[in-house]
Structure formats: structure tokens, C-alpha cells
Amino acid sequence: VKNAIVERRTKVLFFESISNPTLTVADIPELSKLAHDKGTMVVVDNTFSPMVLSPARLGADVVVHSISKFISGGADVIAGAVCGPASLLNSMMDLHQGALMLLGPTMNAKVAFELSERIPHLGLRMKEHCRRALEYATRMKKLGIRVVYPGLEDHPQHHLLKSMANKGYGFSGLLCVDMESEEKANRLMHHLQNSSQFGLIAVSLGYYETLMSCSGSSTSSELNSEEKALAGISPGLVRMSVGYTGTLEQKWSQFERAISRMEVDST
Ligand SMILES: Cc1ncc(COP(=O)(O)O)c(C=O)c1O
Image 1: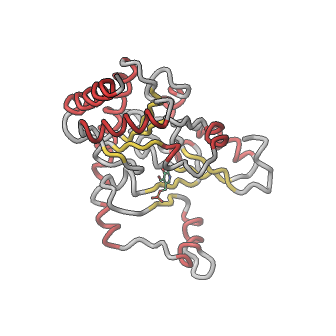
Image 2: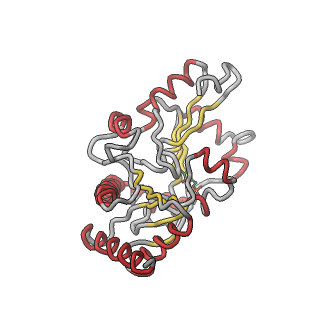
Image 3: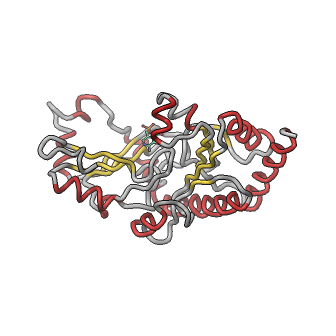
């Protein structure tokens, strides 16, 4: 990154706080320092970790969110947020030059009000998304499933995330399991949705139900196989956005039921 930023020419360093779908955690203080040393502005997409991470406190200049995900929580709103200094936001709203003014992505006031009513329980929801994700990741690992979850000690950036995270929320509501092939990934998702109602096959995230997608053949399908390999997206990678309906134990028994059905099918 240091070599890629060219002093006085690179205007913005843009990255996700936790990457989609590989769940790599960015070192926000370190990347911010590298960028600022060369006069570059830092923009962080914090869609995967509202409440869990506060990139602005860790050095970012601007934080963006897809509100359609955890913040809305209902997969029913298409919206986004740009959080940054007043000077930047005012320039975006400039009558003659501002992108918000010229392109028109101004939120309907009723939608804005409705979203403001969901913010007070965002913390509670994130806590439960994260609590269940950690518990499932731990149990899946015990079953011998290959799991990627930044809350697990064996995740390469677990300690980094711990050092940056706001206390008490956990370590993200998303986890990935690597089923090795797209066929196995699809079979797992089929049973989790249709044999046991553990979750739904959908490419969104941050919903109250668990949502699952095979990233390589859905949200990252525009990449060719070489690019996917470079990005660490294996063909059997299943991204799960962990929901919080029912009790944790009810949901876990649905997961186990789907795994047993899958095993029966393959014998
Ligand atoms: C990390 C991240 N940022 C931004 C977006 C874009 O969100 P929207 O579709 O609300 O524009 C997505 C969508 O999946 C996402 O996962």
C-alpha cells in the first residue's frame, strides 16, 4: 500500500474495515497513517461492522455505510451514509458541483425518520449477530468444518480486531465456511434453507434471519478465476450473515439437522 500511494497524486485510500467476502480485517490506524503521511484522504467502508468498529476514531477521514444491511436490519431499505467532515459533506451538496445535488441520491424524509427509529437498537442487534456468529463458528470448527471468523483465535487478524474493536459488541456478524467446491457449497445452502430452515439463500446481509451466499458464483462472480484466487475467494466459500430469530439452540439444531441430511444424501 505504501508503494501504491503516490504523494500529491493519490487522492483517496479506500478500503473495507472487514473485507467482503474474505473477512480480512484492515489495520485502520496503520493504513490511515501511511495515507496521511503522503497527504492522502482515508475512506473506510464500515458496512460489515457498525458499532463493532469506529473507523473515524481509528484514523479514517470519511466512513461510508450501506444502510441496506445491518443498520436497516430489515433488508427493506436501499440507502447509504457518508460520514465525514462538514466541509466535505457541504461540498457534496454544492448546488453547482456537488454529486449529491447533481445525481440526486437524497434520502426521502420518511425513510430517514424510519431509519432513525432503528438506530437505538442497532447496538443490541449487533451484539446478538456477533454473539451467535462466534458461537456457531466455534461449534462449526469443532465439527471439522473450515470456518473463517475474525472472532476465532486462529483468524490471522483476530488480535488486530480485538485491539481496534469497541468493547462489548463482539467481532462481526458474518462468518464464512469453505466447502471447497461450488457444488458442495450449493448442497450445504440447499439443506440449510430447504431441509431445516436454518437460513435463506440471498446475497444481502445484516438481516434478522441468517442469509447465505456462495460468493464466487454470486456477489463476486464478475471476477475471473485468477482474480478470485488472488482475492482468496475459493469456489466453495459460503458467506453467512448470522441472524438472531429463534433461540441459538433451536437454530443450531437446524444447522446440525441440515448437516446430517447432507451426509445422508452423499452416501
Ligand atoms: C461492504 C459493502 N459495501 C457496500 C455495499 C453496497 O451496498 P448497497 O447495495 O446498499 O449500495 C455492499 C453490498 O453488498 C457491501 O457488502
